Length: 196
Image 1 (spheres, helix red, strand yellow):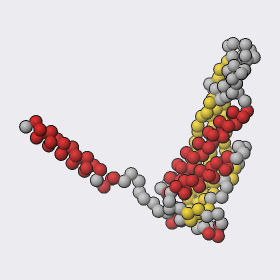
Image 2 (cartoon, helix red, strand yellow):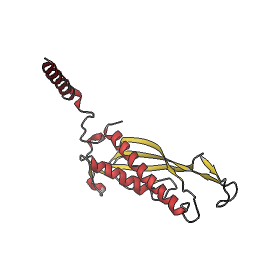
Image 3 (cartoon, one colour):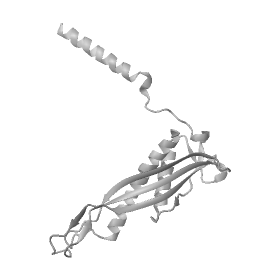
């Protein structure tokens, strides 16, 4: 008798699971095979960089191109004559701000008295994108994006093991911008294909 109930419970559980996964809502997103304006072939020129952050335009351009290629339904071309539309990006601003969290030197053996150091930096990026039909000023889609992320400041320890230098700070800032560009361009491309 106990085996019959176990078997019945197992069959009922399997049926419910099968019903849930085979229902109408099994797809989480709609399948889109074109960009706005039924565009399939685009050019993504180098972003215009209005910020003071040299080289950020390359990271954002490459991240957007990666998203377009990953979509499998968009073709990228280098020549304007071969495309249906141009997807132009503009970095409006990139701000690197020292966070309010600070440490003060208590031990003056290695640091000057009352030294104040930032422990973290905040990076705020603002980017605009527009998909424009080739040969006209018709904007098929446009969007503005802003995102914030943090990175740790260089840490000062013993004079022998000292990571507080300009190269470390520049390197970690560049890595943070690369990561930020990937996240922002993924969100931007998703928003564009969903016609948001």
